[in-house]
Image (cartoon, rainbow, N blue to C red; front, side, top):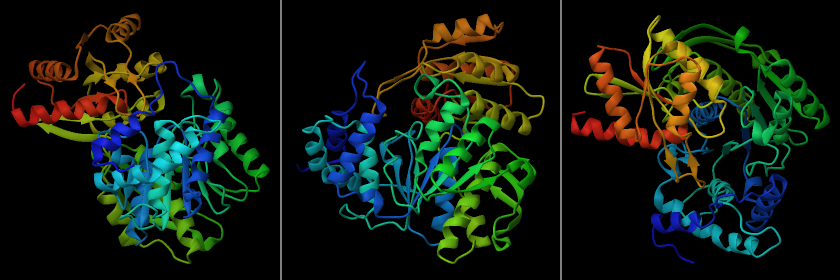
Length: 469
């Protein structure tokens, strides 16, 4: 079936968005994705893959890693989720989102396999499963106009063991782990050990495994899984291997000293600058460098200092400490959505503005650990505008906690300096009005969910264009 344009491709995919209350058991969903890949002649096995899982930092680490590899001349495919503004962000080639025409061609290429699987015992694949299949098909060069990549960097969607990205079986895969902690407990388990075991399910026999330093329970699980899979495990510890971290709102500069095996793998870098705000990005960048070093070593190559610095200094990721301006008013957009990410955000804000407090625009997705997020934010809040979002652009319907319920939680925690806005435009107007009335010079911070940010960017751009409140 030929699709005339990108809009038609989107409409086709939207047929596969699960309806309210529809749930496929995770193991069945993975089996269905495996069947879909097999119907496409297993494109996921065609190219080398670096597969990322974790609770926090995996999108930033994946983007940093892909940028470094591309700077070394490797044609690099990057698979991300969720997207912030456009579905095409999920499939990137050398740092650029796939263009709509090629995305449309990819959807058309996957249709026969989707229909074949839909008629089988597993039923129709989901929107997310199809987009993952499209990603691997594009990266394998099996879509008109798309050359095969040299390496795929693929971020898991949720968990790991039963995630639709977890279909790569070749032994030379690199499994890369960012920090693992509590999140999505309703799906992954209510302890860090259970969550770690789900995420460690991406490790296949013989893989190379690289992990950032983890808390004890997670470390034990990763070591057990790697032993059972005869997978070589390498640790990266930012506390000892990253030094002299100098964070800002829009960048971080640091030194790195990593000691690998053999000693020839050692890396020593001074004054590396990443154009992403917050000290936590130094750890993400360091982990990305270790993974890049492993991949390039397979090609008997080392890291090139000029390429690394150029990649890090020009990186930009929507929704990660993204500083915008409406006239003279700074507005910072960050998708912090769990306690770990919120803690990293407020640390970044206060490192750049010691002793300052901020006006926040806040919305949180249903099911989050609301109190834990708020407890990290409230000590740094001068004022909060509580709002909402209703995102139908992600292959699922994602709703925010009702503003009145979030406001009630603020009251229960003893916080009273807040107001409620029913829409993002109104929330931005209220925050700008409050900041002007109180002569606040620090940024308005829009946060709480990546799913909020599409509406937030649209509201900011509208205000920038109008030049008025």
